[in-house]
Length: 174
Image (cartoon, rainbow, N blue to C red; front, side, top):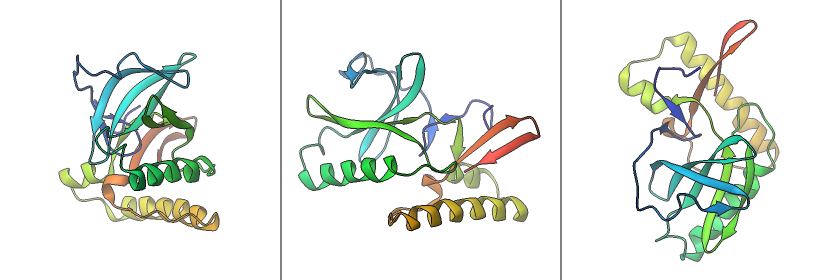
């Protein structure tokens, strides 16, 4: 269940389908994951919805124009390797990463929710909710630090809020 109706996302922002009929990656296979539709884009990459064996995933692809800049490519691959080592309920799960035909990509779980930034643009948080979110973020960051991994871009746009229905009621995951 989404936190707000109509919002879905992939670890870094709201998910929406951008119609891109001429996108050469649509239909392409990356290590067995089929790229299905474009979700959104940012400064360094494009995010796609993909699937493999009936599972839906998010596929983050390094912007083609940047993929040839070796320093950015190495940083993107380091990010994938570092995240791939972390198993924590509040850190997005990385399933795969690689390079296929010069396409540099990370495959991760597809999350349903929205960024903290999107929430804050609409309204201020209740103090209790803000504390819960920060506590959860700090637990995840501390876990990463214990593994000697430092998040270099921690900001509301990179904090993703997920709402889940559980037997005990709703639970918000960061």
